Length: 71
Image (cartoon, rainbow, N blue to C red; front, top):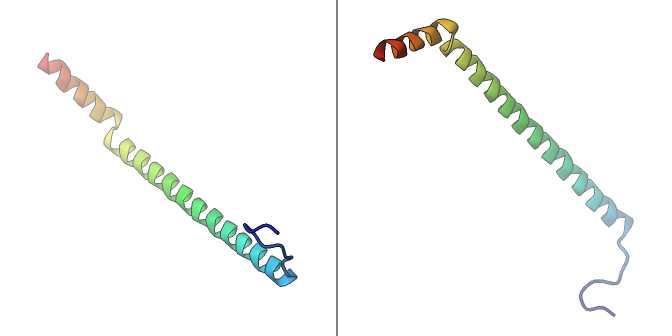
């Protein structure tokens, strides 16, 4: 007999419990990861929109003009 483990069969209820626990963990993890991906996407889109507002062509032209005038 091996002293490291158990030499017995698991009952159907025990197997079902473990499989359900793994399933629930997987579903929770997938939802968690999806929420994080959505949050990352939304933050990136918000940043892009903010950049578009701040760096319009007119603003860039004004910055370039200021740089040319300094030289």
